[in-house]
Figure 1 (cartoon, one colour):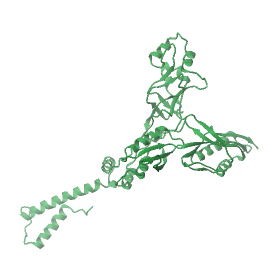
Figure 2 (cartoon, helix red, strand yellow; figure 1 turned 90 degrees about the vertical axis):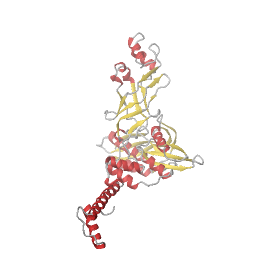
Figure 3 (cartoon, one colour; figure 1 turned 90 degrees about the horizontal axis):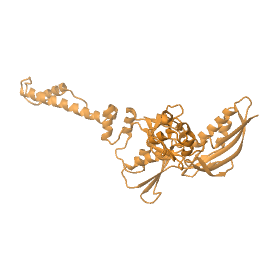
Figure 4 (cartoon, one colour; figure 1 turned 30 degrees about the vertical axis):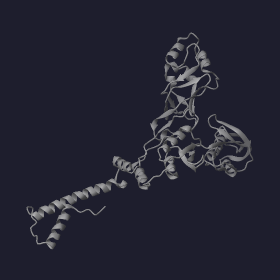
Length: 419
């Protein structure tokens, strides 16, 4: 930005130059020389105003709010707004009949209402069951509220879904009622619903449960002015459809911890993205969002977006506990420490057995422990099964470049005794 000169500065300087370089001596308000000086000084002053405005307009440090958004738009850098947590896949959230009852929809309806009960006709009329006489499905309506345990986080179902005699899990897409990262949840958190508030569902709803198999981490907070200024100032002026631009586009998506890029994995003109999530399990909903994001980047290469192959880790321990300590608390603390350690190992990482030993022995009250078994298998996150387990020795175990270790409280067994 050039040094600002005022109207008076320009006029006085012009008057001095004319006196020194010409025989002009009259510069009064009605003189020709004075009129020209006034015009030149005034227009120059206005020009400085425009230069200052243009300089301010392209300087992110001197803009805020909408003006900062306009600057980013001109440079092709949009402000990241808040993201609403959503999972539209049909592999994550689902409703099901209480599995302890082992009932089909028909058996549940017949247990609740006799054949001649007029409520059965009302249920059919309301579209909750398909047939009053011989029902084969229960239809859960679009817009059903679902919650976490204390109802601080809520979602809505995006469509109707059905539980049938043959399909016991009624999968449906869900959308958070609040934007931002606050609504992100881990697995098996959305376990409440409001179906009981519907009079016709008041009996059936007692036997309907719900859960989310995978974490939902697609909610994100928008950029503040300060964060947006930084993004503008560090953003390269030219973007090409290459690994750097793809990585930059994906890594900013809520729920993505890291990506592993491999060009040509499936032949010439292809690249693969292996996604590591902020939660140990990556949902199909997150993969779909990533596919949509990279589809707008210029380039003709075919993209393959994948979650890692999960290696389920099973362990069983007997813990020797010092007298006076709560055995249940110690078991929970040991289990939680091991789960956190294993699930935070990156793709292609190694389980260091000495770290496991250290985690156990560092829990207050633990005197010693004995390992009953140590297994690693192929974990199926949809059915929550660890298949093809192999019993291992208690030594370091490394995963391959496309694999990630995973465990949960169902895979870490624990017993204890006081000594």
